[in-house]
Length: 139
Image (cartoon, rainbow, N blue to C red; front, side, top):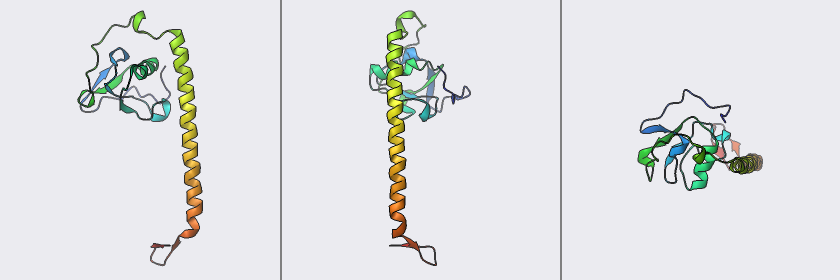
């Protein structure tokens, strides 16, 4: 499934190659061609930690994924033709979509909590500072 912010014009950066989901495995460094808000991972660029992460990336059905071979612990797998054997089952797709919804909700909650804490800090800190005539801040 393509995300709304997916830009088909994205190209690999220096040192990166384009791979597809069949080449993913733990230890491969990937960069997802999406905004970080459009997927459940914390970062767009990371080393795949386990087979579960590789399956979750594959379930996103991205036409291309970028791999930085120098930053990878292992090289990507050789390119395979898509077969029914390496496609996620309907149960896996359902489980991944539920997991994605849960992780996205947690991410949004964390973001809101961070924003609330930042706003509360600024409100509490505001009276502690005043500006002198030169624009410097003092306690």
